[in-house]
Each structure stands twice: as structure tokens, then as C-alpha cells.
Length: 162
Image (cartoon, rainbow, N blue to C red):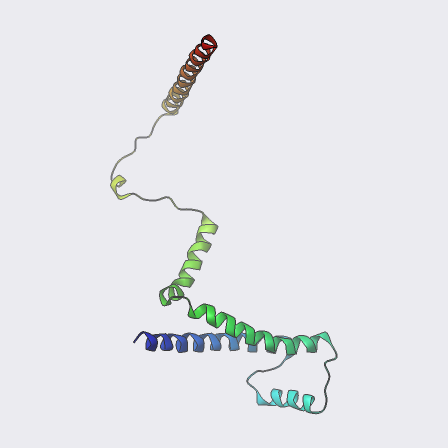
């Protein structure tokens, strides 16, 4: 059963990827070289060009023929990458990219904790806020004084031992 689902997954992913890639490539070929991948007349022109001993003369022609090789490599490589993704990751990928984009655009949102809902926060005066900050600074200064006293006592003990 696992092998069967693997085959189904491969068929679905590769067919969707092939349709998307061919549509994109057809658009690009029409835009740059006015070559329709799905039109047999355009392919007959290329066939007659090669049959009559045509040579690649410009970089544009070289890029045109090299793009066919690149399409094949891109189709195989991306098809393999898409096959190894999980279906759930594949389906949620657009939402994940959109969420990341929103986070970059608007920044992190504040978390809402359910236990804090319904509690009222008092609006404090600026004087009260300043007094609280001063108390915190005073506590830090007191701690620094205590640590300096401890350091002095340790230094005196070390000096007396020597």
C-alpha cells in the first residue's frame, strides 16, 4: 500500500510540476524568441534549420538552444525536490510564505495570554513610574556596594594571608 501511495504521489506531483513548468517556459519563449512550445509549425522551422545545416551564429541562438537543456535539468531537479516534500508541507507552503512576508512587513505581534484577559491594568502616573525606576536603580547601587564590600574583605584576607 505504501508503494502504491508513493507512485500516486509521484504521478500527481510530477504532472502538476510539468504543467506549471511548461506554462512558464512557453510564456518565456514567446516573450523572448516568439517561439511557441506547443505549436508544431515552430518546431518544423527548427527542424528545417538543422536539416539544412544551420549554424548557431549569435549568443541569442545559443541561449535559445541552451535553455532547452536547462529546462530538462530544472524539471528533473525540482521534481525530485517536490517529491521529497510532504503533502501537508506542500499544501501549506503558500500560507507559510505569506505569514513570513506579513511578519517581515508588520513585525512580530504581541502574544495574548488567556489568563490575562479580563484583568484591568492600572494607568500609572509618570511620577509613580519614575519613583519605581529610581527604586530599581537604588537596589542595583546597594547590590554593587555590597559586592564591593565583599571584594574588599576578600582582598584584605588574601593580603593578611600572604
